[in-house]
Image (cartoon, rainbow, N blue to C red; front, side, top):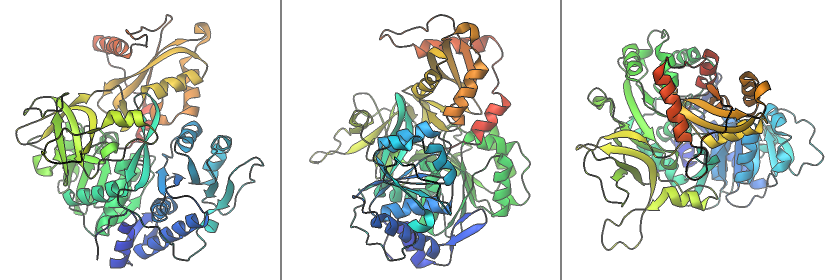
Length: 551
């Protein structure tokens, strides 16, 4: 049987090999590969009947479910591009994504549609909204889109007439926060996804009897990777939206999960719980992404399931996965982010493009088949991050594009990498990359704040605790509690600050006249060093941990 080169081939080929094997399970309901392939085809046919132009964007705003998975793969089979939207995002963030990449079709639930209904008139490219419901609410009279149910959308069982495609065609747009404001869309090709899945399944040694627990949001590369990795080897992906960590442990036991990929905040919570007996009989590995795993947490996990192999990984949405630390190296190099994943190469370069010597700090640069196509409709940011590699072989005519991570690392004599820090101001809390500007914009939108700056304070559990320093509009009547309640209505839980610092005077500026985040961060760090560090409020920790993800 031929090797896959387009995303939907992963399902088609596994359906041809083992049609009766379980492909997907959600809330006790399983789909075989034959059933999933059929549903994928009906989605593709439904999109074809809409008469969309090639490479139209299909938005998916759903919790994990069979319909969402089938829409993603069916969209690519119809020659289109799927846009998975994090289900914890609020209406304003969803509207930005829909408008930014001109989503033409949106698949969502009835409840989510009702929450979005007031913002959809501001999305002029939207032509069709499909609800995973038995009936539709009344459609607004001024709506430029049509409204229909999932059953209607997938009713035609005629085979789709899939267009001819190449593996360099775009397959998905994954939105990730940028250091200068609104989330930006990373354009992912079929080649990126298929090659990445082959690489990951190789070093994780995945096989057809694997059952992978998908706890991370499918809107992120590491979350969606649980699907592509399982489908590459003909295994099964079990979908789980959890609210309490104990649900994860119960599902591991009930579904006899063999592979778990999660982020440090979740692993920290899991390590503190009593684990069901006999998990060690079937859990072959647990993989970490989205930040450094605390050593104490790793030790506890290994004590819970001593037979399971630990994989410590590092990655960029712009390049899928980049590196992993083999389990055999964990004890010898616990602080390393490993070496390049199979079929990719990682370089450490100086600012002038020359290679660094061993143990010399430099910028991590990723080359290979998983380097994405750039940022959607943002040539400036694309040119900043995606650049030509310095010519390494004389005589080559076409230069090679690579992704320059913005991360400072060093590589030892054996090729193992060690993370030093980021070159930008991005925050990372509970596994989420967060733009400080986006938090500041949300603060200003409340009407309660005159000036604001968002910074990240180091935290072993979360990566960063979000702190905001602000000057109120009305100092005499200002209440931090009122501000936080307002933010909870407009931003996802992981963006709600853990600390609010109120100033009566204007915030300091740097030489460019911008608010000086660096000096404010130093001030807060000095304050915490002088006294007990502020703990994350239990309710805040629970809310962000329940939405944790990888990148």
